[in-house]
Length: 190
Length: 190
DNA sequence: GGACAACCGGAGTCGTCAGTCCGTATCGTT
DNA sequence: AACGATACGGACTGACGACTCCGGTTGTCC
Image (cartoon, rainbow over all chains, first blue to last red; front, side, top):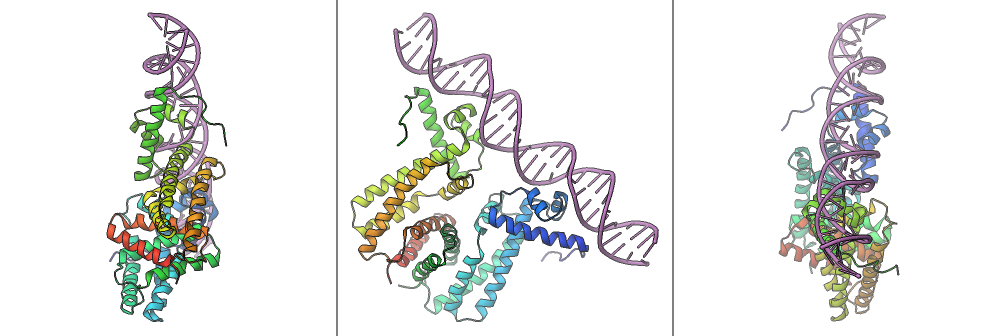
């Protein structure tokens, strides 16, 4: 698709880039996207100049973090989907996406608020996951485990919404389990 | 609880205040809470000075808008609850809250991000609605229409989450209906 | 081990936005 | 109609945050 890697980064540059990405993931997730770039740079032990050399824009940093998480989810989803029955795979992946998406909604919003068209890389990763989800959905529906009238848009909206539900609920595992039961039972055919 | 009205506002002041509230509701809902105060003032046909005299802080304006919407929801909920069977009332109010809460999540987040403790008025209105919801939930559970293991926190989280689901889904009424069916079926006992 | 490119740090720039201040206009009352 | 109280408008201020720029440092290759 696009030109692959430019040229290998110098060792220190690669190290800094990775640290920046780690710290940004952590900070954005726990404290929101409003955190100043300077603070992220400091936490990573670099100057702001370094941050902006690697990610020309705060938005670009946000996007890089998102892409990384989406790719991780896609990989786990693929693994899970390969080694289970359709129904089991579907519900397992649903859970997985929810559990992995802590704080991700806010990211998505922040990105969307800044014009989505520019984010080619993100859309790429999104499409991968969406394709996986479409397949899982179709499989589960053929196996009679999910209502047949639901489409991919509804599934995605439900994933986003359930993720929000969980964020509001906090960490209580019993309550989370009850929510999953409500949603999963609702997804099954009447 | 607190001292009621201070002293009747002058006619022009009351008018401006009302216009400000209307415009702010509209603008915050459709374009998010990031819109500059100056623009809200201009749209309402007043200067920023006037805006800040009525609402000493942007946050205070946000809060006033929220309180107003919450009160409207509470009133409609009360009406609906009074004239229906428990189960019907519960599901009707669930729908109502979702339909009325367009864009409200973002408000809540913005307020929360700025320290929640100061927002006494908001918490007041919240409590009213929460009490209504608790009663509706208990009624529906006694009527056997809702799983008995669910508590108020789960219900509230589910409301917030479903509201998010709907926002992602857009306006398609058929799809919205399908989501309601999923969630409502999930809420019913096995 | 030296030389050059690649990379770093962080003080400084620029724009934006919440909130203030005060001279002016409007309301309401006698 | 005239006067005091109340409210208005919008230029101005201060804080903050994204991004730039360049003198100095570090890695890498011969």
